[in-house]
Amino acid sequence: MKNKSVFYFLILTISVFAFVVKGLVYASLGSFIPLILATGVFALFVIFRTKPKVLSRILFWWAIGMILWSLIRFLIGGINNFVKPLTENHLHEQLGIQGTIISLLFFVIGILLLRKKNRWHALSFYYEKLQSS
Amino acid sequence: MKMHVLLFLSIFVISCTPTTIPRVLDNRLPQSISVAQKQIVAVLSGHQNIPSTTLQLAARATIEERAWSRAYLESVLHQIPLTPISQSYRYRNSNPLVDLLVGPYKGTNLYVVLPATKPTKDCIVLGAHYDTARNCPGANDNASAIALLYGVAQKLNSLQQRSTNVMFVFFDQEEEELIGSKAFVNCLKEQHYNIIAAHTFDQIGWDSDNDKAFEIELPSPSLKKQYVSVAATHRVPITITRVNSTDHHSFREAGYEAVGITEGYVQGDTSPYKDTEKDIFETVNFDYLTTLTQLVYDVIKNQIQTPLSHEK
Ligand SMILES: [Zn+2]
Image 1: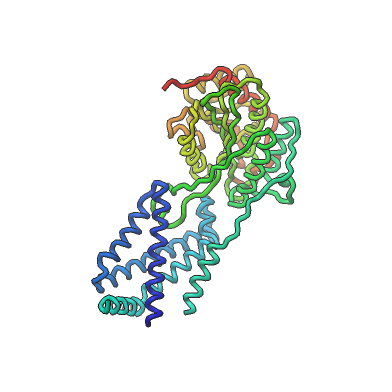
Image 2: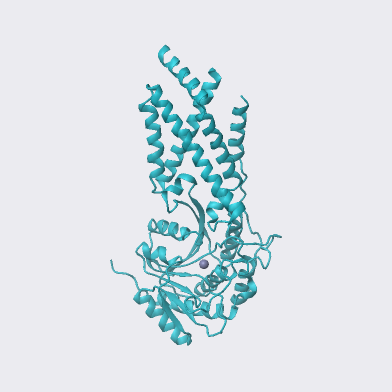
């Protein structure tokens, strides 16, 4: 249970920070929506860290977000490779093999974060730690 | 535990994609400008191997194809001889929602400065994109204009006096919302040059009726005057159009004086093979390219012998 919970928080951190980094990259290029969104999600986790029910809801929607994100990428990549090639070479390159691995990775992360059992294990482990400290 | 391993293995695979920087070691272009121009179009459109390799460019669209094209273009510029500078950039997507889904555009422009023969900050920019649509050899669009710039650079280089710097730029990713020239304009703002005007060239290789007619797109009044006057001395028909779908748009948007130069795009004497796999070497009209090279050279020569420096 301990290992599983640590793993849960590890992949959660990876998923949030991946988007924070993406946000920082885009902010340096003059586009702020990704950073606003990523820091917004991060802030929600921090603000509601002592409220298990709300935290579980946020985790649920974050996981749904991850899954949707990867599914849209799969869809665009699939259309590009199997239905009609996109004229945008930039998208074609980003949704190639490497891009598909990234989508797959986040899809798996999304599924793992979404599972109710995982969420509650991790949260109860977290609150036990919180109370004992 | 298996899931841990799988996750980290995929992160490892993602971060370990090898990158090699191609080099063209031995590229000796012929002395004759028009023969050299033919060779440039031949190599860029995959009609001929990249010198010192067994590689033929099928297009100039993927990261690898563009890297090899740049390597070849660097070797071309060294022949003039000028030292090329790479400007690598990242650029946001036009829609912030796309930013959420994928990474930014990544590309590299290549430029050189042919210096004035006396110290000055004045500079004229001449540019053409080197990328193509996917699976398109891009002989006309836009190897023809790259070859034109090579010819103009060679001719200007042999002038004894130049009162203005001339910057030659090969833009990346024109085919994708003019990203390369937009990124270049950003880089230009940080440089110390006083940009007098930007001339960009796109599709200079089609002239089915051999009348040598060409079009200038959205010229400023002074640039229009110069092109019209030189076209008259060459007895070449010229049409002024309002097309803004290529690189000169990026310069105008940033407040620079700009003009686009192209074949009979609006008049209808234009390559029917644009963005297709039929845009090949054999379709390029090299007599037309030679005429326009001389014409553009004359326009720029006039400018750098009687500079039009802006008063600010
Ligand atoms: Zn073009």
